Structures are given as C-alpha cells and as structure tokens.
Length: 247
Image (tube, rainbow, N blue to C red):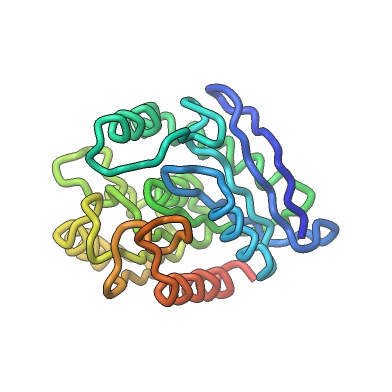
C-alpha cells in the first residue's frame, strides 16, 4: 500500500494531504476522502487506507489548511467547552462557500493529475463537516463526480440559508448516499426529514438512512461515539456505491 504524504498548492495557501493506493503502478479510480473536524490523523488514515485497498486511489486533504497544519488540535475536544467551541470556529469559519468552491477545484485538479489515478469518473466521501464538502464538489463537477457519500454530515439542510448544501441538488448528477446519526445536533431529525423531502423531489439516484443507536461521529474509531457494527455497515455501503459507479 502506497501512503504518500504531500502538499497541494491551493488558491489560499498550502494544504497537507495523503495519497493512498494499493498499486501506484496501475491507475485506479480516484476518490477524495474528507475527514472530520480533527482532520488528518491515524483514525482517518486507516479509513482511507482501507478504502484504497478496495481498488481506489484515495486523496485525503486537510480541509482546514487556512487555520493549521495537522494535527489541527493540540488539546482534547469537549463539546460545550469554550476553548473547544472557539477552536471549532477557527477551523470552520474560514471555509465559506466561496472558499470551499476554490478548494474543490484545486483538490479535483490535483487528484486527477496523479499518475496513480485513472482517467474517468471520481468519487467523494465526507465525514462530519466533510459531508457538505462532498455535495459541493459533486455540484461543481457534475460531469466528473459519479458518486458522493456523506456520513454523519452536518449542516446538509439549513432552512432560510441561501448557501445550504441541499440547494445544490439540481446541479448534481452523481449518485448520492447519506448515513445519518440518530443523535446529531448538526443534523437533527427534522433536518433529515427536510433533506429527504428535497432528495425525493430531485431527479437523481440516492439513498438516505439513519443508523439506529448512533450519535455524531459513529464511523470514526477515535471518536467516543464510535459504533463498530454500524461503522462496518457504513463501509460496506460506501464500497457498494463506488463499485456501482467507479469500477
């Protein structure tokens, strides 16, 4: 397994990234893997590595490159703690929709230029904040992104927000998958219902599921909410999605 740490020249600086491939001598379908709020670290490296082992060249960038290089946290996260909430804002606030669009273009160009990546459709998967990024990339590159997945993605449906990710559905041609948590303040049960109504009105192929007994972060091994059985099911769904659209 190739695991190559590298840096991407971005419109607003430099982003650290990792490229994974089980056989870099053979071009494979490309996938962008967006980690959660803690960015690049071993838990997400293991997830990207496992995805790559299924026959993909996987690029995992640091979405928060405007704020910090990995590790982007130097203290334990604790929801509700003022220091934690301030750090959340420091990481997320610079990622305006306009900034995300600039980043999306740079990530896609970099991925598709790699010798380890096969010419053709690519996939995107995002966790936590990365779920919205996956939708934005699918909307920005409808002729290229064939599949996009979100796991415990936050803020996918924002009422009365002209920049809500769900409003991009009309621009998306990719097949979509959403794996939601039961307990998630960033994507409530009402938000999920509203998103699914929007998806039903969209002329596209999708699946949206809420995983029983889960809280935000349930797919990631270093998260206190980690649920191994549900995480395994989520991985199987992701592999199925990419097998149907990329391989």
